[in-house]
Length: 107
Image (tube, rainbow, N blue to C red; front, side, top):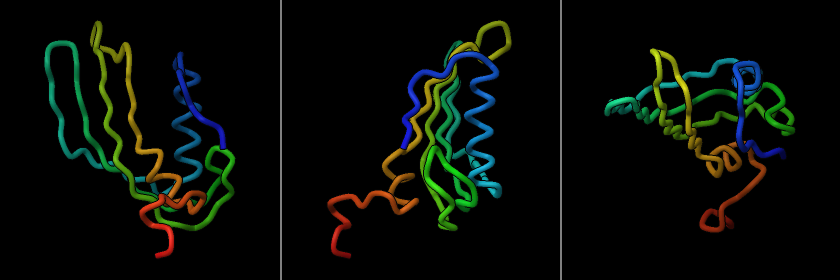
């Protein structure tokens, strides 16, 4: 499975978002908390969707995914200048069935 580190530029960000949408065509993101402080916007979201397409090298499983997605944005000139995304990778991997956390093993 590939890992995503720094993604720069509109085209690259669009490609990552496109991967999510292709893998989870029924993707639904729901904001739980939004906090604005100066040039920063924090959004705590929950993402849900059904794994129907390749997801960073994991073939479709048909499983339902549900994970937290906290994001921090810096706004400059009315546009997003930077984003720090904290998608819950462990929940994604567990939801895909490619990883079982130690506390769930044997269940």
